[in-house]
Amino acid sequence: EAGGVEVLHWDASLPALEPADVVVEAFGCDPPEDFVRRMARRQQPPVWINLEYLSAEPYVERSHRLPSPVSHGAGAGLTKWFFYPGFTARTGGLLREDGLLRAAQRWRDEGLRGAWLARHAVAPLPQERVVTLFCYERTELAGLLDELREGPALLLVPPGQPARTMARATGCATDVGSTVGLGRSRMHFLPFLTQAGFDRLLWSADLNFVRGEDSFVRAQWAGCPFVWQIYLQEDGAHVAKLDAFLDRMLVASAREDACALRTAWHAWNGLAPWQGGFLEAVAASAPLCEAWRSRLAGQPDLCTNLQAFARSRMPVGTQAGGTGTNPG
Image (cartoon, rainbow, N blue to C red):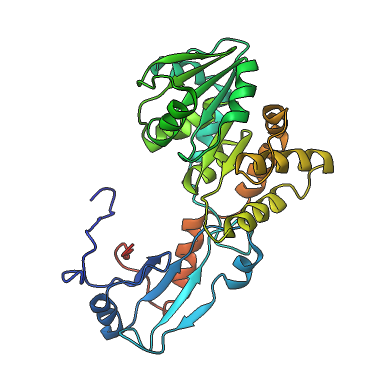
């Protein structure tokens, strides 16, 4: 338990857990039936929210805040509400804690990058482009490595899947703290970082490779050029999700710039052949990424929206008590 948040092991029944005024179910995880029965037995049923996956697809705006009455099973008679994170004012928004953007701006204004990198034994040369690589292990790196060898760049590689991917692709040792040559570039292998430390890594880079959902969002708040590796889905649904995001982010971009960045992202996700000039195409998106961050920053954050929605669904004269429950 920390900061008023208690994490419990989710077993078959969660026997000691009483539902709070608000229950947040993550990603349709279906809470245990005994817990749902306790929800249904409450004199005032809790506000039951299904917090969904992040997507830029059009269905998100249509489905956000829609009710889903439960007609059978332990929760019969209750209503579950869909709540979608997203990138527009017609969605739930993105996670953004208080002070995040001010901290990132202060980082740049006060030139804190050098001191932070030095604490991790990283010393970029004046001409080197600083690039972070946070990727899945299945990544095909041949095209990127060819461009990096032309350099000059300093590639910062976190441990785990990114380091294993580099070891497989280059045959080099990936000991934490080591720096390895790569043509006219260098690779440096980082230790595990805290979440705050990972933010500072993103702020310290000229270009970030990110993956999945969380680092993808944090890269957008960093406001630097980035490339997103979306999680591969066997049915190919990830392709539409990738393009839906690009459609939104690139809507105000010049056609040539938009095509170049889309081609680069597609190549990184194995959806198009690799083309020369990849790093330059991504680096050129710096003004776009700053403008995109400003656009997102003008919207309320996910937690603020979620709390406001929960309060709006509660009877007049009541308010949420406790911290709520996320069985997921």
